[in-house]
Length: 256
Length: 75
View (cartoon, rainbow over the protein chains, first blue to last red):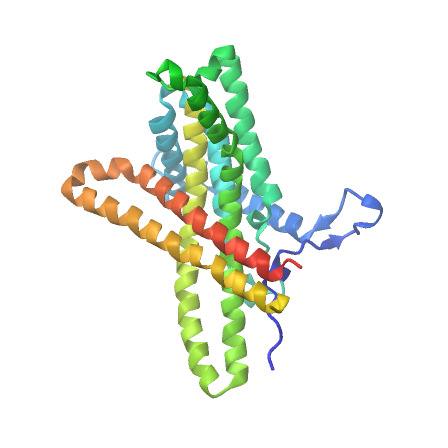
């Protein structure tokens, strides 16, 4: 009889060097190592394309295309003043993109270590959405002062409706940081649980033999399809984070 | 009712939300395609909004999935 599937096991943070004993803050965990690998990959990728050749090679075109893509998004939603905010939008996009995509890489085939899903921890995506909202609040209040509150009252609102609309818009504004951080987290979390559960179904079906093998083949085909979908979702979530961040910054820069 | 079976039934009920979200995602892409075929010239400019709509619909379905997982595995 097959054992119980535990899909949560893959998200456990374990110390690799040092221990959690005595509230030691300097512990190298599997999450930390994988974050360093992601940063190294991003660094390698960006440095390889920043040679500034007059006739760009393939690598340089890839890097410039990525930057141009985010630049277009920021320009389209914020306008000419958007260039100032490009560094943060691009940083968050590239980090989420690489972290999400690299979590699906089959490194378990060539080494003992499986990839660790950094963005399936709410601490990572939550801090990223807090940084986005710090930018929105600081820019909004420093540019418009208390006039920033007019963001919560759209133009042409009847006088009677102002308190109600203000309250609704305030709530809508207040839940934005949660939904912004929750989205990439939940997408990665749910995707990896789904893959883990169906991967376990394939193995258990093969072990059971007989009719289990047919179920196992079906689950394997489904798994391949879901894997392709998850790669799409990984890229879309990074793009959505970038586009929503630039939309929120646009609210703070231009009000309505 | 046995608490263990109630847990599994609850998780199954929570998973209905994922199906509802799939209707939403289909609606988003369906409406986009419908209007994009009417005016293909304007379609490219609306892709950002398409993905925002997709992400909003998908997030709610993923939340239903997360709730099902919490019911199943949180003790």
